[in-house]
Amino acid sequence: MGGAGSGGESSSGGALHAGGASAAGGSALTGGTDNGATGSGGSESVGGASSSGGEAFAGGTSGDNGVFPPSVVTPKIMIVGDSVSAGPGCYKGHLKEFLAADGITNFEFVGEYSDDCGGGVRHSAVSCSTADNYTNAQFEMSNCSQGMSFPGMSALMLEHDPDMVMLQLGVNDVWGGSTPIQSVLDDYTTLTEQMRAHNPNVVVAVAQIHKINTINCGNGGFDASAEQLVNAVPAWAQGLTTDASPLFVADLWTKSFVDESNDCVHPNDAGAARMGENWFNAIKDLLR
Image (cartoon, rainbow, N blue to C red):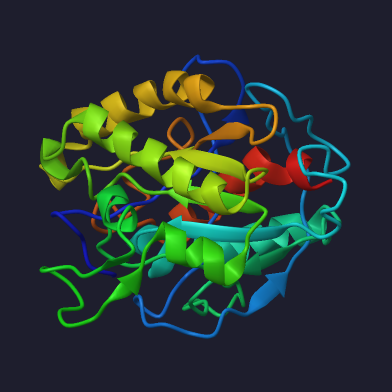
């Protein structure tokens, strides 16, 4: 299932939203990884399916790649996340199918690792990881993949030079209420600054994580800490977006269900299909 970091595991799915209001149903996009094992920085072109798209908080217009500089002909997209994006991160194949069905093909996925679900989507997600992990140049984890070292955001930007980053971190950070919400937002800020240090025009899609239940899986509810993070993300993004480097919020929370997971965290087949559709709805208009 992919390990949990800081006692948890991450995932998302949702639609892009503008302004600072918290979004309600969304979508997530990510690529699977061989549980964090490094691979060549290959890329995968994909296409899309129709649904409602997103809008930048400030600057950046969706459609005809309007959010990207004119020099970007085929946007390179890098997925950064935990096991929900890495493995099992099987929503990636569904996302790819939705995009292809909608005729969206002018982009490519880039990243450190190969897809663990057979969808051919490159990504830079690592099971058990947290937002804080990625703020470091390199990071190791005490509870997963002991003895292995993984590149942080700065190194990934240098290696893969993405035009767009899909950031799907936060589940492991708030696992069981373990990390203050402001600390997670501060890490998101650091990661965005690291992206912009390499590419001042980077487009960032930040996921509002999907519903999880890390405390009592049998009660049908979801973690209050996760909901608090989800509610805080839009205002955070509004405060950090710029004309040159717009931030988008992908709402993966509203249209997600804890019971579409065998462990109340990692999406099962139905949950993966829903997450793939949510991510599609969030980014499709940015890639047309």
